[in-house]
Length: 94
Image (spheres, rainbow, N blue to C red):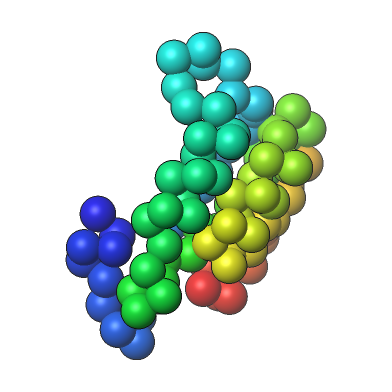
């Protein structure tokens, strides 16, 4: 959807905020997600992922891999009290 509605000159980003690990056995694994992101990348209409790991249980490595796959950025907020600052930092760099 983001590629379809891409707007030149605007921050075409997806913010992915999670507080844990993927423990849903019915959802795609990290490898499948990275393959899909690679297949859907369009250099003429780039969409970046800004990932935010919220809390101590978030899978920072997986979120960093997703961000890298889209030339986005990964952020970490292990202390829930810091989420506002981290969220603002992520969006200000979009």
